[in-house]
Image (cartoon, rainbow, N blue to C red):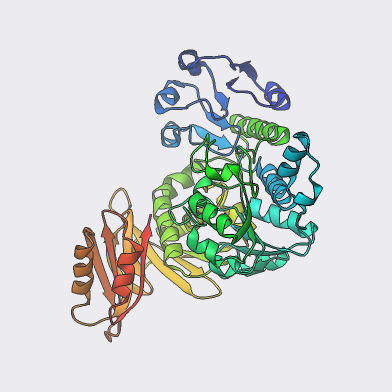
Length: 526
């Protein structure tokens, strides 16, 4: 078999490949040359510069695996690769240590005025009294986002004698206890209790401008902020105002809303430390990414287990044929259940009833985890890494099976249990393509095709309640695609589910919940 190493990886990674395959180095190969040569290779290793488009993948007649030496796979057309049966594998945790260490480096530089003192001394001045710093010892660190990197930062901070408070609704209370970290109930709860705040969450609609003027106002006077995660998490204008007022004592930033980013009023301040997105920029991290990716490619080409596959899971072909149509349903149910919940997630139950119960349903259980965790972790979630991501967060997956499915041929029910409350949703596949349908929420039954945007309400079953929702949706220019209602026989409680052609604003949901009789309302985007 032939392998093309298109971009620079560690020599040890290249040697690993050469032990099993015929390897070519194409570091100087142009896009045109790559397009002509790709048909002769069984695998290709890339970093971020090579664009694996659908057209290029289509030319890879022998292509079996694309190895991405790094975390992101934005430069790979994953759907096109999946359609062609090409495995896409990456090295998602290769830079975790580097990112955690850089977070600590910025924290120390910020508290001890290292860049400012260096600049002063190399400029010919001895201004020792101007750079009195602050110790990390005895301070409280707030970690927002407690995945792999957040946990590594917490461990290092504890070695400095810091107390650590963390918030992540996808980490169980037991996991916090294991790591000696106090779990906060909310971001707001955390902000008011800590001396330093570090961010380790993904960019989602909910986390953009997570640190804004309101969040800064909730912090302790003189708090410090470090961001090595995503630039969009921080409102830089609000940070500048916080520094100007003295509410913030200092800020350290490694990432920015757009990059390259070289000009902002913050850059001229002595209470700000900035670096040009260096979180993963260590020789060890880059080498580790190359070696890990080479191992993944070797496994893919020799029939081994590809643990970092982005687009497939290791399932026998006969099981995949029977279960694959239900993967989207399970992901949607997991995401919906998570979206309807309130508290942290420590247990997920996936119940499979009917014909699918006769199969090895582990793939479907993993698909439920993908839905539950999707958009809430630092790394992209897929069918391979979801179990490990859940284990890291102390989330337990319980699968149950029953050959009977009542009124349905197959039925999937997802329950999320947490310390605060629980959520239960059910769905089935309809028609020859097993199109996902939602058939129950909060114990009430109905029949509704899934869509990208849903709104679900629990309310008192009185006349006119549906009309009230429709009126407000109309006033808010929300177009309802379909709707369904499930109600108890005694008429006391009911559940209404609607699908819309666009996301429903939180403000719209709040308007409805202000009406008499409406108890719970959520909008969920799938």
